[in-house]
Each structure stands twice: as C-alpha cells, then as structure tokens.
Length: 461
Image (cartoon, rainbow, N blue to C red; front, side):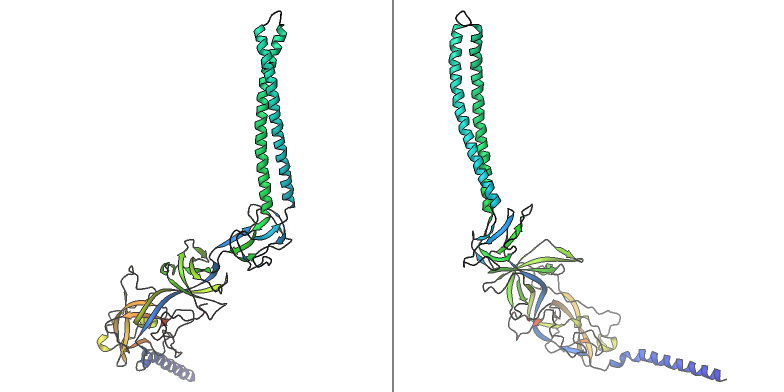
C-alpha cells in the first residue's frame, strides 16, 4: 500500500513539473513583451567606409650592388663625409664602396700585356718574312723568265731549266704562306687585346663602386670576408636611390581588392610613431597574387612623401583605404537591419504573419560609383506606443558598425529598435554601450562635429 502511494505521489510530481515547464515555454517568452525595447535615436551623421590591411614600408627604388669577381674584401670606401662606408652612408654615383683583393687579377693583367706584346712582335716578324719571301720570289721570277727565253738547249741544261721553274713556283707558295702568317698574327693580336681588356675589367671589378646616388640601406660584408662569384653575383650592398619618396606594400584580401582603385586616399600608421598619421595614395595593384593557407592576397603599392625622413625602410604599416564617404545621412546600427520582432511586439495594424519581413545586409562599398547596382532594400522597426512598426528603407554605405539608410518616413529623433532587452543581437547589448561607439580594429563613422576626413588613430592590429 505504501509502495502504491509513493508511486502515485511521484506521478503527480512529474505531471506538475511538466506543467510548469510547458507554462514557462508558453508564457515565459512573453514575459518581456511589456518591457521596453532597446532602441537608438535616429540622427544624421557622416560615414566613411574603409578597408584595413597591414603592409611594409619599402624604398621606392633600390639597387642591389654585387660583385662580379671572387676575392677577399680588404677595405671599404669613404662616403662624402669622409667616413667609412656603412649602414646609412650617403653616397654619390661612382663612390667607391669596397675593395676586393686584386692580386690574382693583376697577375692575369700582366700576363695579358705580355701576350699582346708577343703577338705584336710576331706580327712584325711575319711582315718581315713577307718582304723576304717577296724578294726571293722576284729573284726566282727573273731567273725563270731568262730560262724561258733560252729554253731547253745546249746553252741551258734541261735540269737547270726545271730548277728555275721549281724555284719560281716555290717562291710564290712561300710568299702566300708569309701573307697568311701575317693575317694569323693580326688575329693573335686581336685575341691578345681581348684578353687584356678582360683582365683590365676584372681588375676594375675588384673596386666596387656605387652605380647610383643614394643611401646605403644594408651592408652585407665585412673586411676579411671572401666573396665568391658564381652563377649569381653575391650581394654586398643595398642602396636606396631616394628615401624622400617611399612606398608601402600592403597585402589586401581578395574580397576587398575590388574596392581599391589607383588614386584613392590612404591613411596609415607605423608602430615607431603611433601618434602620427601618415597620408598616401594608391599607386597600383599588382596582379601577381599570393596564396597563404588558402587565403589569396594582392599587393597594393601606396605612394607617400618622406621628406622629413621619419619613415624608415621595412617598418610595419597599418593602412586604411577609404573606399566610400557619405555626409549628412541617416545611419543605424547594423543589428537594426538584422533584427526581427515577434508578432506580439508589432503594432496590430502592421501584423502580417503570412508575409515574411525582408532583411538586408549592409554593403561596405561606395555609393558614388556609376557602375553600382540598384540600392538594396531592408526593413527597420520604429518604436510606436511601446510596440514597433516596419519601415522599408534603401540600404547604402556601411563602415562595419553602422549603415546608411534612406526612406521618406525617417525623421531625426525617431527610435529604431535593434534588440530585445535579453537579446545579444546588437552591438553593446548588455554592456550599456552605444551601438555608435567605434570598435577597435574596425572603421567608424565621423560625426558632423568631427573634423572633415577625420580617422580614429587606433591601432588596427
């Protein structure tokens, strides 16, 4: 009997708990119906759409100075201030940067000089031999002519006749050979001269000179170090031609590269001078994309002036590209365009449960381009007597936090709902922060009280 009573009590307890759960599911969701919605007043503002990326400060043009001969570095040259060539040395075109030991190349030069002298002496000897062979041929020619007049007879033995003829033919052959020897010595002279020029050039290559006017960015050798020239010339110095003109090579994601055009304004900071904002302009977008871990990026060249020399090569730059700007427009938090109220939160005259509410995602592009598609549509919910009513809007520029909207029904001060009190759909929900507060690492809007073109100097990294 006790066992039956205990079982009945357990069954009643389960039923009661189930009823509590069902009641909470049915009525609990409406517990906040009477609670005020989270809203934000509608105001005019300026919106600047930006793309953020990281890059490296690079000299606009650098020259890699190498060595075309092998040998040991025995000395460095002097810059225009008389100091030994080192990092940061200012050099002129033709300034001696370093000296390679030229002992072996000087020996080759001496040998080439000797070979040229020998070739020239051989040429003189060959020319003298030609004169000798020509004189012998003249003698043989006269003897042969007299022999022909006498002919084989009692006055001239046949053997002597044949000897004169043979001497004449031999003289012609010897003269031809002497002429050929002269040409051969001339070729030897040209060959010796070429070897001499090669040896002279190798000796000249032992003196490393600056091919341009600029600043030594990098010195890659020390005195006593041996450089070996093979298929690739060893790099000794890196010289920047003009550090008053500098570039920032920025890696931009493929999803954003379509919004970047040559001539666009760029603002960037470097960690070395975090308090200073530098300005530049997009030069060109390189077409040789790179892929790292399936992420495709393009290199964008940003040109900027560096007259004061503050920007040093290879600093890391945090760049911000301005891709669009809208001044004096209505803007709402992005969450407001994504939020959809429950049916019992909508004013009765606007309830249409059979018609889904359209929502739009903000686009982070400029509305000023002539090839932009027709503006997309979205829905905002304006507060009305504790409930909300829908307003169809045209969605414009977005900076990642707020989005430009247009509609004839929008008025300054209208309250736009963007979340329930217990919802986490909006920026700043549960924290008491304003949805218009800029977020670190993202672009922000610029209020009308801010200076034109102002950009927050936050570190996007």
